[in-house]
Amino acid sequence: MLLVAPSLLASNFLKLEEECKMVNESEADWFHLDVMDGRFVPNISFGIPVIEHIRKVAEKSCDVHLMIEEPEKLTEAFAKAGADHLIVHIETCRNLHSNIQQIKSLGMKAGVAINPHTPVEMLYDILEDIHHVCMMSVNPGFGGQSFIPHTLKKIRELKHAIHERGLHVLIEIDGGVTLENAKAIVHAGADVLVAGNTVFKSPDPKNIIHQLKNIVC
Ligand code: DX5
Ligand code: ZN
Image (tube, rainbow, N blue to C red):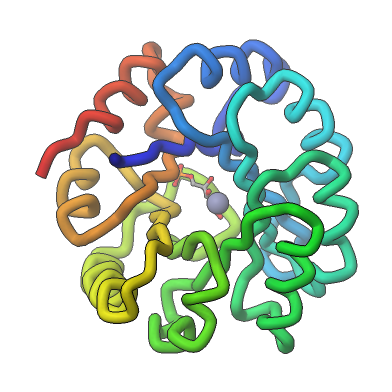
């Protein structure tokens, strides 16, 4: 079953509680929460105190996407804030295997994100240890960018590698997902669609989530 994870980065921060309730009432599966440090990516979003508050109203899993340097230093703090899934970028982890073990030892599911320039082969020796891959289909740091078409080839390659190993790692696609391109993304092998602007900038976000959930290819 296809999963949908609205990215709160595109929500109205002045109405965060209402936005969370909309996601609760919708057919969405996860809350996607983007944390940026102004170092790994050229932008700063929100962090631990905001996630603690979101966690109090969120009735679905919180999928926390860390776009930060040295994520291992804050893993415990994000666990305490209530993250259900913690995603670290392969480009920020010199000791990725131990970072993943740390995330799992704190009771969270581990995800690994890769940037558009990072080959999927870099993930092969870690696939059996993780819950999902967050494949960036834009350069991380900002919502509202256009989907990079080369991602479709990477999704197919990764899907093949996962199947070959008999694993059940989910492929999450993050960035530039729209109602127009979602079908091709799912057809290529995506299991989870992150959507920020497509959901929150719509006058009827629940309906957009419904449409994304029901993409058939
Ligand atoms: C980008 C973030 C994405 C972003 C997606 O760095 O990781 O999750 O919020 O936003 P849209 O769907 O608007 O491209
Ligand atoms: Zn994200």
